[in-house]
Length: 177
Image 1 (cartoon, rainbow, N blue to C red):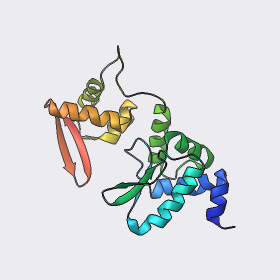
Image 2: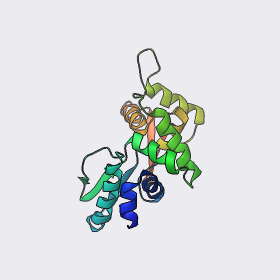
Image 3: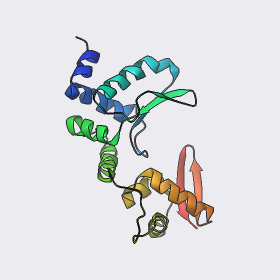
């Protein structure tokens, strides 16, 4: 029996294989859940990884999706927690910190609920306090909110003319005006 077949059958072996893949191959930090994107050249490997994750109920979709000519799938939050409990932690301490945020936010909704501060206000307060350019990841970790919630608040604040945006390569930073 080969490693693929063993990983397919054993959740423990599968988690021990998938965790390093998440660390080195998946988009991870800055996302609400780990995502693996590959070109058509690597579709066979992607399909094998997907089938292992699907067998153990670790994926968010029932099939691999196409985005801009590349193929991808996401690990569900509960699947990621399962993998991490079996095979964690990561070698990179920053990825462990990001994992803790994702696990902490599991099952929680957005950043604004009646009677509480709006996310835009929370983001503004953090940016005023830090007085420096901050990435979405830094804001997320500071506020203990997921990127989708923080990005939405940043877009709203930018539309209102309250923020400046700085793009350096692929990195984007934000600062209060």
